[in-house]
Image 1 (tube, rainbow, N blue to C red):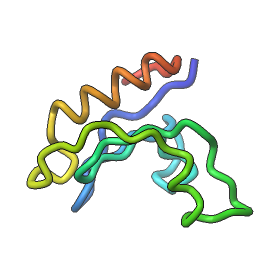
Image 2 (cartoon, rainbow, N blue to C red):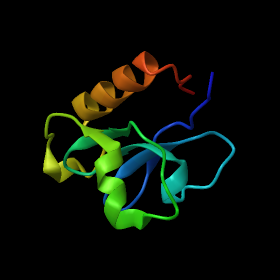
Image 3 (cartoon, rainbow, N blue to C red):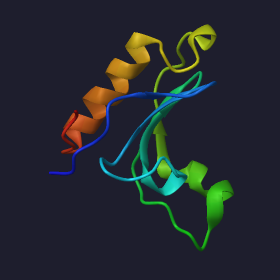
Image 4 (cartoon, helix red, strand yellow):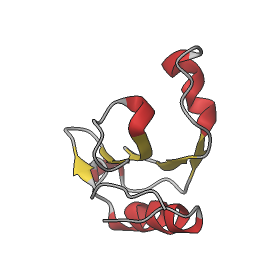
Amino acid sequence: MIKLTKWINQEHCSIRCIANTDTSLKNRVAFIEKSPRVRINPYDDNKGWLEDSKNWEYGPKGDGQECGKYQPSRDWCDAKLIEMGYELE
């Protein structure tokens, strides 16, 4: 089972990453700005960040005023991550 970080709040978003890694794009498994999303395919260094948008499943749009801290969006991501077999911190 892959362990994940707690939610990491950044200026305009919140993310969950694989535990004991940095917050670079390739280590992110959940991202919330206005819409929550979870990674369903691994990041590919050969394709870059523009193509990476195809590697995410998007959830229902949340409250854009909360910049990733909207609890229903976090709950949606967490449920998907648990369903995918991740261990949440």
